[in-house]
Length: 477
Ligand code: URP
Ligand code: ZN
Ligand code: ZN
Image (cartoon, rainbow, N blue to C red; front, side, top):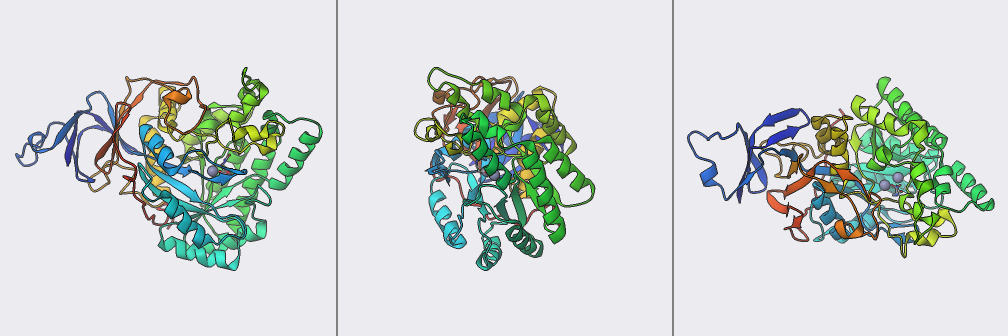
């Protein structure tokens, strides 16, 4: 199948250009001056389909480098399967995800990796890769890290919170970092001080403070800043590159900026929820159905931060100055009924997570409309840098000859109302983003040359998406 996308504005991280894009089979064959011929050869008459993108942006497909499809967590499992979650991603202009293989303490890492490959195989609408979560760092974990790199799993997430579930102590973290500094992989860190949080949770519950708001209050910015600083110091000690996930506190971002300024290989992402949603939104949330428990819809970790403390502004600023390089979703959806409601009497029992995989490209495009970031920066944060950071750039993250035909046609004159259960494709009984209006619209989505979304219609098939083996981070020497 040969496709010519004609008349649009191609947006790469490097800038914009009026250009036609020729996709041949699964690959971009050429990026051409509008209406050009190839040595007298009339391209338009020799392709199978011409798609008119006049007045629209033609961008590389989004890459969401932090998702948790069907993740077992908090006594339940994230409600999106690889099938439903990746279909929702496709609708939102995301054509690649990097999900997390979970290892709980005592589990065999390589067995878990095989299990996750089995879960995803034949299910996905878009291409996918994996990071590996390490929960207890044993001798066998270190050799597993080396083996997984050969499988294309080149980044490892550790947790400084969730004692007894995911938490690694500092000694375990240092061991994993030492190995990463030898084998070139990237350590991703959930940076919150778990012991402090566990104590505060206990104290709030003892005082009868059980509503979802106290989830946020018991995970203060100091716990994020302290853990971020500690992670940076441990990475400094070992020489390991470090990527801090889901940054929400401005003080944590300041630690990251200082480390980067000193020349350390420290990278970081934030997520749409930390750019738009706040602790006050959670406190004020109430509904006839759920009362104050409505706030459970926004229980995630790191938590939403107070609007009055300037965190959101600081995140946008960090995105502009490149102290933050990536925007992921940390998509980890749970339904209110039958999942989040297990915490009705105790906020600490609410499974942590928000679902946004379908809305990331739109929500961050709105940042362009609001004047927070430029168009190329939108593409850089949501596609190009995730590709470079996680070793898939060239194939993904750019519109250029030889890249995969992962292309999104985005209409800046379109409109997207993000809303209720019925209008999204994620397997959730609510939306954390209800009422958000976007001045743009994902019109058409190509995944490796196949048109999989057209005007809100899904044209793809389960299993279209393929596993990609990743190389080492392209930001590291
Ligand atoms: O609330 C969150 N973030 N849930 C997913 C697990 C994690 O820490 O990323
Ligand atoms: Zn995390
Ligand atoms: Zn996560």
